Every structure is written in C-alpha cells, then in structure tokens.
Image 1 (spheres, rainbow, N blue to C red):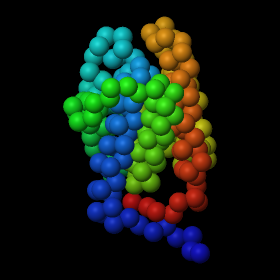
Image 2 (cartoon, rainbow, N blue to C red):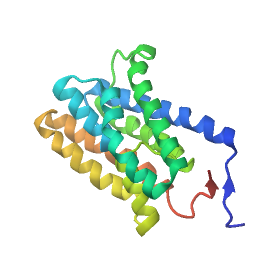
Image 3 (cartoon, rainbow, N blue to C red):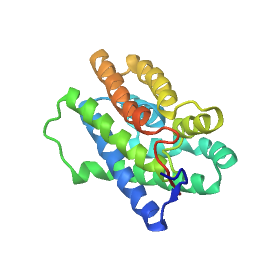
Image 4 (cartoon, rainbow, N blue to C red):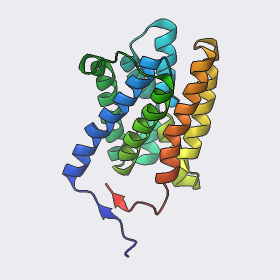
Length: 202
C-alpha cells in the first residue's frame, strides 16, 4: 500500500464541513438538554451560558476570535479559513437546532456518552478535512504536528480541567457526567486521529 496521501476533492471538503458541524451541534444540544457541558471553547461558552444566560452559539463564536492568529501563523490561511467557517456554522447550528429538534426527555448518562461520541465524530471529520473548531483544537493540532503529541490526549487534558472548573456553576453529578462526555469525545479522537492512520489530505 502506498504511503502517499490521497488528496480530497473540493466537493468532499465542502460536504464534510456542514455535515461535521451539524453532528457537533446535535451533540452540543444533547449536552445542553441534560445540563452538561463540554471542554475547550465550547465548554467556556457553556459556562457563560449557564452563568449569565448569554447565547451559547454567540459566545462560542466570540471566544474563538483570538485563536485565529495562531491558526494563521502556524497552520496556514486555508486551515484558518476552513476553521472560521466551521466555527461560524457550529455557532449558527447551535442556535437553530433547538428549533429543529425538540427533546421531551434525554437521560443525562446517554446524553454524556452519545453527545460526546457525536461531537468526537464531527471533530474527526473536520480534522481530516483540515479544519477544526478553533481554540483548543488549534492548539492540539499544532502540538501534534510540531511535537508529535496526540491531539486527542492534549484535548482530553485541557477539557478535563475546564469541566472540573465548572463545579461552582453546575451540580456535581452533572460535572461528573460532563467529564464522562469529554472522555467519550476525546476517545474517538485518540483512537482514530493518529499520524499514519488516515492518508487523506485537503
């Protein structure tokens, strides 16, 4: 088998962004419905939403703005542009999804596990098409490419710290389930996003 990367067609990149973002937004909706939160910049947006009732999608978009400088400097303008589009789409979908899908009941344990899995799969799609959700994603991808640290492991460590910091705002049982959600999310990335595992390129 050849080690050469097979380049994605432009239409493959175009379809991956909205599909991955829609999965992420649905996973975030699971978390929000169950009173959970995620890690990274999404987690910070959750904290602001729970604390001050500020719009989740809008806060997520604003928190990511400072990270584009790092993305442009270290990852290139194509990655930065795709990431900006992904962040904008997730921000939009997070605000629109509650009007598209109504939950009468979501078991918090189910929301933590499968919400995390959905966000992880959505992030995996973005990573494989040279995009991210900004913030910690940019830092994790940079550290993987520069120092060989696995993006999933870096993300998991940062996410755990952010989720644990929520103990003053979110009930303890929801914090514990949020940690489980962060683990399920990052398990998808740690097992599937490795150098040499996937040879597609954008």
